Length: 249
Image (cartoon, rainbow, N blue to C red; front, side, top):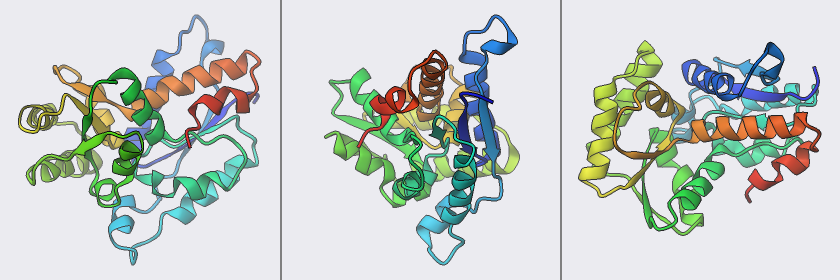
């Protein structure tokens, strides 16, 4: 297969399915051959990311990701994507394993925030406890000189319930709970824009988009960027050149 990209997924599987569904439905097609070429590595056995980030005695998920990336690198994809925010804890170490471009979903999303909402000085952040605990998005947002609002102590339990109890454990999205979280972040904590720092939250946005709040959805953004780059490369652009604009340092 020529001109394909590799998706490092399975964190979790339903969220990865959402990303694949987005790229399949957003690309403009008139025939089978118009779809994108990709290889999906749905490694559902990767240890829990939040568990390790909060407690390093838990299984380290780096080694599973390293094995997946090195295996895919032998096939020479044009670029890598990893539709899991929390797994970006090891982004720098993973990107160093190969010279193949490796898109950073978090940095791409944060830069789109400042491009789309240049007058906003802060952004609300909802994410896994692991991402919050290790300041993954917070550091990226501070790098572009914006403030982060996490909301009050009632927010994280609501977000955790939506991510783990509803989506990861039962495979369902509770639209009422998702909308309640967005409403509280907007009304109670003054967040005009809210960043969805977990791909399960991106799934909630896909399934329950009928709300009035501004969100930055990294998985949706990554899907659009994936389509853009894959089509440029298919049309003859060098992969390194095509990806360069999105490899923020």
